[in-house]
Image 1 (cartoon, rainbow, N blue to C red):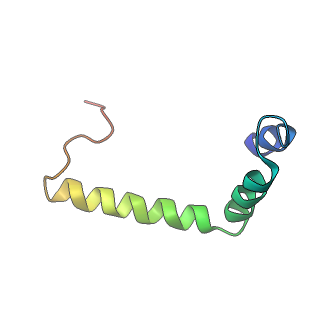
Image 2: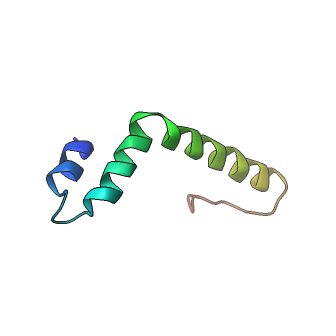
Image 3: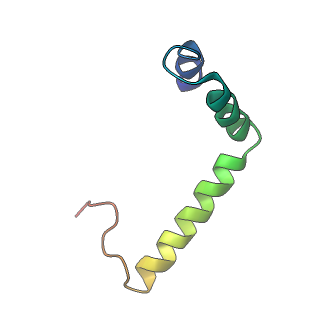
Length: 58
């Protein structure tokens, strides 16, 4: 659903080259890997007390 909306905006709302690159990264799992790494780094920072309540949820 989100992908279809992004593709509908290709060339009007979104730069075609950037959108193609983004979709390619999503399709090959790179975005998932980057998000997982960021989540792990955030969890580590929280465990060290460097960040408190990063989600803002009490």
